[in-house]
Length: 137
Image 1: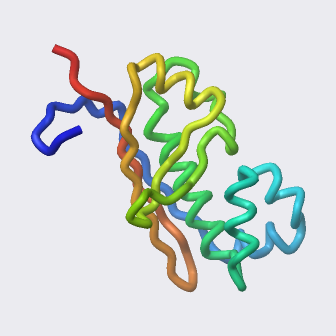
Image 2: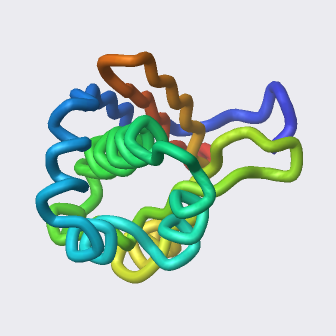
């Protein structure tokens, strides 16, 4: 899309995650939690971090924010954790790659654009997502 192109917002989502809860989850459930929540590419990224807690929490918040933003689409309640992958674009900014059901629902819309912003502090992580499509005339 070019700046100024008309868009139709499908939804906006926001989520906030407590780092202490994620630290406990990773300590208690370890690889099982990582495999259930994250794609292989996300797990590989987290494995490069000395302390993956904040990065994992930010990705969980992003996945939840995108999930919430897609809820106006029929069938979106069945989207799974690994159907939404947090990646980086060519400039290093957070980006979203849809897989499985999420990708199919996006395709049914003629494709979607997802804008996402992530943040984390020593206590919490948050994310905001906007899901849109080109406006149809």
